[in-house]
Length: 287
Ligand code: SAM
Image 1 (spheres, rainbow, N blue to C red):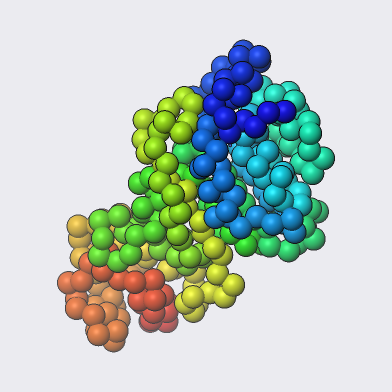
Image 2: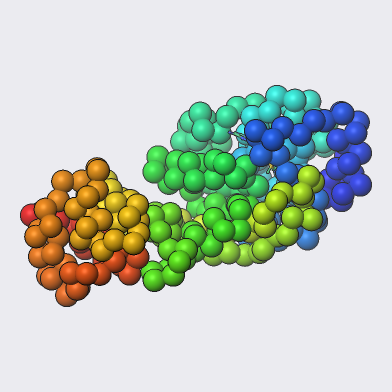
């Protein structure tokens, strides 16, 4: 099968199967070989690797993955794409296509079966509406992951990579940083896709930490605190935490903890680093 990175080959496949794009599945297919090469490079795919691809579409990136990896599993929700994938991937014996919703797949089991529980690489050009649940699901369910290299909406990539004190910094930045090191590797304009999305995209690589960067006694408490701080972004951290629906913290208790850490009582949540949120949650969990 011809290289689907070339736009004319993708168009030929779409016409051959009279394919109708489904908006509800966020279908924008990549048609730029340079971007595809860039993703493979950024993900550092080698012949040793088992790769999980989420949402293969007509198999464009899957072809590149099959060329470079030991084995690929591609999970696609749209059953209309399954016969197309059987055709476009017919030259490869190292790929399995699963017609499933990725949010319902037991990825831990897949990693165990296909990679004997060793860390896997995840590569995806994600449907934007499920970006966050997919990434957080992978991290929180403790799937053995080496790295996740994904195409996401540009502004989501910027939020993931943002640091304290910037407008993009928020709960997503902190959650990502807790689990991984984020690095935007390419900006991708709408004309690299068919059909063209309305927004710009970016490829971001999230390299899973081998060891936790901070020591947190109660992860759930820290993340509830982070959510409460950014839900009410314009309020002080003390008020945000005190009003947090998922928390039960007294104002004075919070002021005291901030004092212990040498932080001002009117500081805002957006000024705190991950290390400071971790330290604050350890203090407040004790009191
Ligand atoms: N990887 C292809 C490419 O780069 O050309 C397609 C990318 S397209 C942005 C997203 C793909 O994810 C579509 O094929 C869509 O049908 C699939 N998809 C959407 N929701 C999904 C889900 N919950 N589970 C698995 N695949 C999904």
